Image 1 (tube, one colour):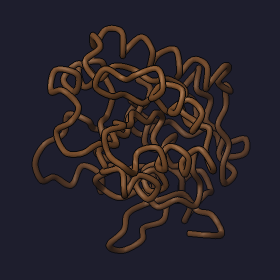
Image 2 (cartoon, helix red, strand yellow):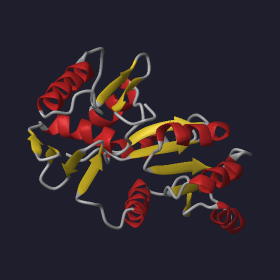
Image 3 (cartoon, one colour):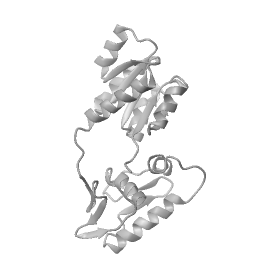
Image 4 (spheres, helix red, strand yellow):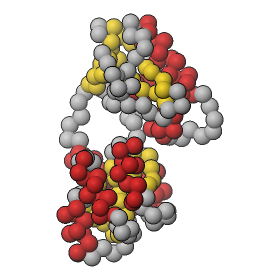
Length: 224
């Protein structure tokens, strides 16, 4: 099962209609939220797959510009019955689209899918990091010539780390991405990290998975 796409909602609390948020969740998106004045920090912290930004806040257009300065992430905006001037201003600021806040959820979902296709025209069949090779089609993992047998969830967890070697993922972010339906306290992450560590060690790759106490987990890199 592929990692669920993350969508960062940048809005004043409660601006996006509850029906729209429900449709996004049901479609498989993992929703993150931030207010416009915190847009850039939130984007850099979460690195979402898509951004949906509400234009009603005075800082909204600056937020679009600041995110666009450093990223080509698909960025859609919405507003209550946006005028032609608002649409042009949003697109000139760097947005990929500008919608009515109350557009039918089915239309919003279609536009999000279109942006995802445009942003990732062709996915590589392999992800490589720290000597590991993950084949996304066969779901096989190799360290050098050594094949490492992993379960589906172990593959998803290792893929998450391998796509961003050196980055530390918090427990909360791992839960949102790998176990989106997870609720309550559990040591499930520690258990799976333990499984992967043992398998990597047996394959001759000890120490690749690192723990940053109080911060989270990540794949070995010079910066971690």
